[in-house]
Length: 308
Image 1: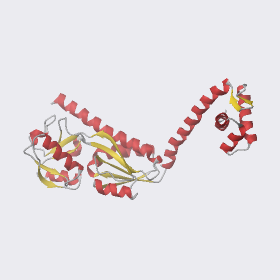
Image 2 (image 1 turned 120 degrees about the vertical axis):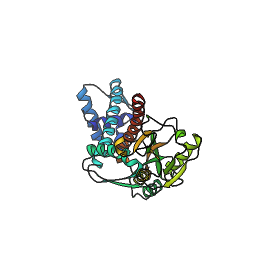
Image 3 (image 1 turned 90 degrees about the vertical axis):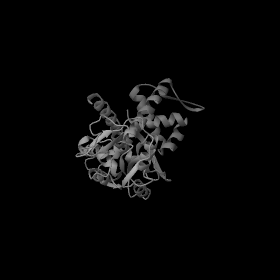
Image 4 (image 1 turned 90 degrees about the horizontal axis):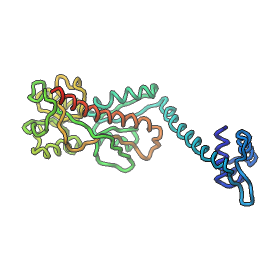
């Protein structure tokens, strides 16, 4: 049983005739007739009947029609999924990441991408959300992973994935360093190292603090995660960061923030005008990595609460 013969049978039944099926498939009529005869010989059953109204399926033909569509659709989907591997067998993926996302998401993402696409060259560009989105508009980047909400732009598709758990990073001698978690209200007197106004992280911090009953005192404004960590290490204040493994923060301490907090989600953005079918697998890996961040953050809170 060949897929091409099943495709012919479907066309004959749906078009109600051999001539119309031949036109639809761009085949000569004799090839269409031969395909149906091959199937009838293989199954030992008559699959279609001809009458003055055209061609109609026999009961056996109706049953085979259902299976033929299942098989043809499955083959089509298999081809689409495998084409992703072929598209990324080589070439380059240009990935944009916020600096604060790099230590949290990138290690898992690179491991998974290397396992799936060992010959794919991955170029990572760090930057501010606005800069990365602008570079996506001009197709300088293929995919951007960032925090949402962020200002939308025409021609781009924004996909929210998961809520982001947060921690506060503090110096090694800070009073809350050994707590299982801490509420923002207990940090009302702290000074904060944060990002410029209108940055999603800055807006989130201000909203969260106001809900906790105070306005944050900003001691330093930085552009990147690396700068943020350095300022905290130097004693300028504390900072809110996406949840990360404790070793990343040494000699700092990372203390999970209590929930509930304002929702802050991570996601990815791509250029809708481009053909991004081949990015499907990559975006699945991005989604999995972001979900893992949320899951790890929740698990860490539970563990620290039990051991505190």
